[in-house]
Length: 179
Image (cartoon, rainbow, N blue to C red; front, top):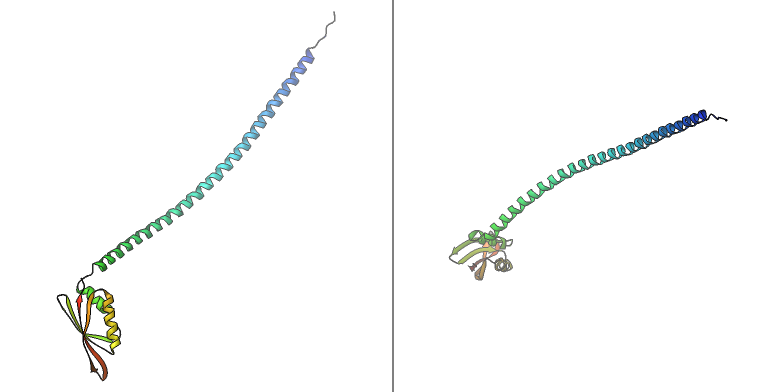
């Protein structure tokens, strides 16, 4: 009987298989580590980028909040001005009586026409004055009619007079107060 000793061959094959398996394990671990480190690097870069974007967005948000605050202040000021203008317009609309009539009278007087007398009794008004010519008196009467405060404006008297050496026209007007 012939015996063949295969033990050293088996042992050497076993060692080589173990070596291959250990080298595959080491290479696999190294590969996993390389992939893990590269993934960590990518993720840390993304996190850093996201933090920078968040910081940038927060700065933008702060600047926008300050602008919004300024806009709110402007809106408050605008609302205050609007309230004041509304009060003024209400006062102008509510303005009646002698103040309104005298304001209309003052607006109606043309240049080179002077009023010397204003008398109010009830609804009737009498005005006397001096003008350089008849055209100014006619313009004054038209202005009074257009003012809306007076009606039935009539020229009662017009006569020539001398004022400091200048020939002028003295006049008297009668009218009714519109209500």
